[in-house]
Length: 419
Image (cartoon, rainbow, N blue to C red; front, side, top):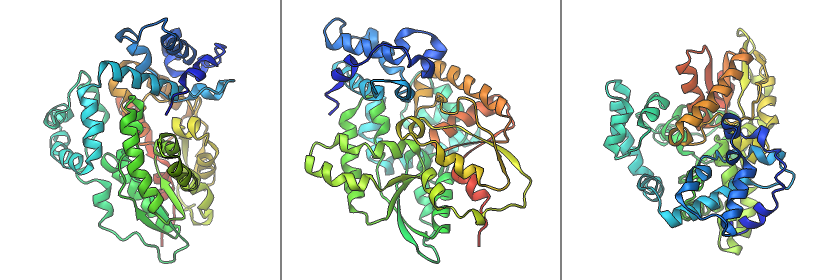
């Protein structure tokens, strides 16, 4: 798995076309903060010219893995794969931080435990007295950036999406098909209202919904180089994907969508990898599904028009190369005036927990994004990734901007005529 990293880095032509697309390079101007610089470092390490030591840690771990460089790369190098392998080599040599190991090897493998712990943390955070920093201490989480975590998450929901969804029967009056819904961690634990909007849209369009009892997709572990955990998550979830008889497998998180489609890379059994391929082709991001299935006649058109702009999640734009669907949906809502956001496909700096691990860089990247949001002069900033929603909403709150940040499915549901 990922053992052709050296072949990738030696194909880098060092042309520099990655520079104008790289968020970390644009805020730092440093050569080692752009794809070609990182490629050369990994190459030098592989060739024995540079030792794998702690001095190169920042260069390896400050990459957002947004893959924006891929769009401009003539050799078509997937830098995220290079970085993931390099991070794996690093933690294999120097060990994995205790917090990461606790999350990837225990909490995310036992989501019922994580759910209980968040219920303990919710009253502390939501009271506004001592906030999330104390709540994280209750959970045993620690680190130098607790203040950033405190600010990013406005509230901890008292019930997860799975708990709320269990209170209803998600069956349509007339069934035109069956959908398996893959529940992302961010939406399940932090933004259940987004998941409820997804479930309602699916049933309104006539699809019976099977809510999969899935684990985390594995992308957070991948981002930190824990490829052993990635294999575990991919194996567990692949069994669920192979077992469902749904017409589609839907996710409302672009990161989950793109990573699920990569599961064949983490399968050591070639037979199972071959079995997986047709299933992976059934995985569809909600933005694409909305564009294909929405009945435009069912949209409300009696409300005051408002202005909407769109931020492309990195995994939709640069991993799945999916940009058209979201814009098609918004442009067809009668009372929406759509405005293209400058640098819409530039990372917002959220990138999972990057905004906590590398808060200084993240804030600089976010500032550039918010400047573009101001220029768009929109009432609503829509996107399709829970990490992006959290990051952008925090930036809007911090700057007192009169902009609502919401998932595309919430925008669609808000403008849909219901029976």
